[in-house]
Image: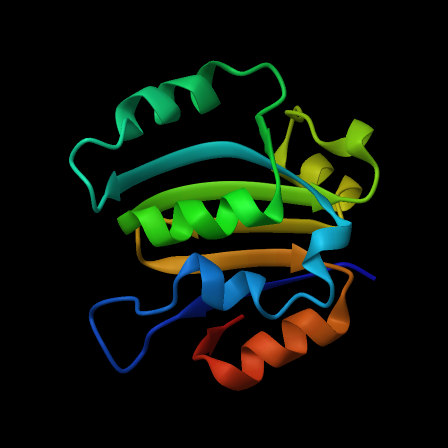
Length: 141
């Protein structure tokens, strides 16, 4: 059964949960295929072509296919991720843009979204992943 949780920071005005905190709670995340469907971020290095990367993701037909290693590098290269939408599944054919969020969340093993630097919305049928996150961080259902 798929479930969606929202994670926010109730103790601070600043969300201190980053992409790597989320990814590190997936059991064997390297087994999955990943796609970035949307990103808005600020790079630590002003020479990093973040605007070009954002444009490439936005204009891609099925999102920007990537690896776990590249996602970790992206997380480390950013001083702040403002918004991101990632999907993951073992079946690469499921990594595409969907007609609705509901269809996307139903189809993909993981849907990971950071909204306006305010909260993470995570959908998965991986109950252990969601339970681990809900135990570690503030949770809003």
